[in-house]
Length: 180
Image (cartoon, rainbow, N blue to C red; front, side, top):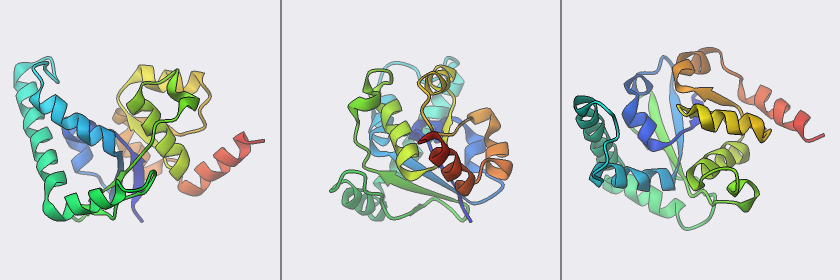
């Protein structure tokens, strides 16, 4: 069974170990984070501080854009974009990694405390009942402070999340207990 995680598309390009998981993985990506890839690739601001790292990450961003622009993948994404909260059919990167693109819609409920991409990430995690992967400590702290009932793993804990993280049924029980 594939482990599912909500993630920003740029993190997959930035952290190479996310592309070599020990188990099959499904990355659920809000469409707005794919659109952000174009801004990062074409923008003048560096993505990484080190120029060599920045060039490498921008190359990986371009490869990811090419993957999403593949005609079959593009059709699957376009179909998902027709209805709010629709998930695309799986986009297969290789035998162990697949992506699902979600037409996430920002929601004012969390919009004051989180930026639009963060809001879409947490709402996607809540709606689908799956954990988030993030490299932003501030975002993780805000999730805890706002008592958002979603599981979040730091990118550095990726292997733990894949191998021993909270199962979907445990997360559903966690979410159910928070409702009462």
